[in-house]
Amino acid sequence: MRKGLSNFNLVSLTLGFAFLYIPIVLLVIYSFNASRLVTVWGGWSTKWYGELLNNQQLLDAAWITARVAFISATFATVLGTMAAIALVRHGRFRGRTLFSGLVYAPLVMPEIITGFSMLLLFVAMGVSRGFWTVTIAHITFAMCYVAIVVQSRLLSFDHSLEEAAQDLGATPTKTFFVITLPIIAPAVISGWMLAFTLSLDDLVIASFTTGPGATTLPMRIYSSVRLGVTPEINAVCTILIGIVTCVVIGVSIAAKRAENERVRAERMAIANG
Image 1 (cartoon, one colour):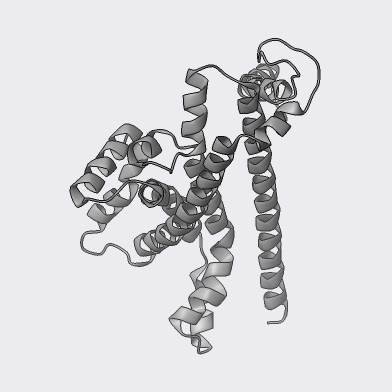
Image 2 (image 1 turned 120 degrees about the vertical axis):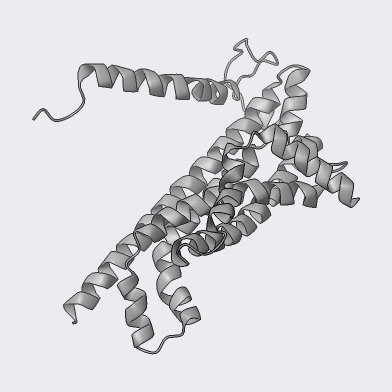
């Protein structure tokens, strides 16, 4: 059997990656453009990063976006993990189909419908739109992605480990925090990262649910682009790319180490009888 990629697959893969990443590379390069015109190269310079520090509107929008993403990802991870445990551990309880449909509905729901429906809800409840309405809206659509990631890990979970812990006298709560949660931690962390990135990137739902003083960074960038792209936009996008890349690499390394520790602990437990 022939191993490795065929020439056709190699060319297709190269073209695919080039299509995905060449625009990002160009954006990063032009963030160091000395010229005020973003399409005219004027030499290497970092002055637009300095100008960015003086742009208070962009800095405020970035701070609001980071807070919304962190809070919504944390709550979405907790709720999504609870939903995944309910779907996997409690079998076919009454109303399971309806519950499963409600959990996964945001996956197939167009963002514009989700955003508009959330807007109608907040208006009907008389809630002033702002930071917390954007956060609540992001929690609702991000938790389903967390539920899918955690559920896939729970389906391959070895339940004999929990049974052994409970046979040794551990309560269900202690078993969950000592045995279950550390084992599914890589999936929980991945779910949090996915929710954080989705919140960071959202424009449509935030546009419907935000209010005065709660403009997110994607909204600020979009409104700026409509009036013409500035080199500062390239700089802030490059910083975002760097932050997301560093966080993804860090989480991947942490998850890999946690998985290796788990495998080593299991081997030691088996070796010690």
